Image (cartoon, rainbow, N blue to C red; front, side, top):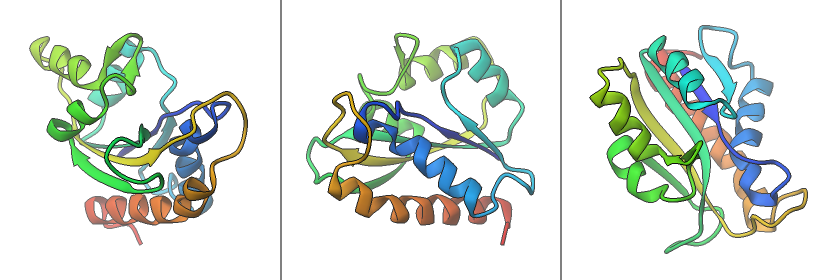
Length: 154
């Protein structure tokens, strides 16, 4: 299983996907067949990596929108492709468009799930807003649960 953490840690709450990835690593994930990777890859590197896995979990942030900061959203690709526009982008392509393009090019893609946290503060700076900092452990726990369901990891 591939676990991708996206975000920019120097843009406050936007770095929560990377922080969740590091939290999983601290819990011991990544040793038993899970690949934990920061998502700052170029599109072609990302798709090469995706093609080598059966499943992928994407950890990222999403601007607050209709819910409070710190709220978690679990979504499949179909739902996430609408949630992530224009925030989740791969070199100018949003996730939905990038994955549609990959499918049209007959790239073999894994089953992809998203765990997204609603955020509010993506201004330059370090550290999370209070609601995001409080919710980070829940995001790590939810990601760990999702990984265990699909891999049987303990």
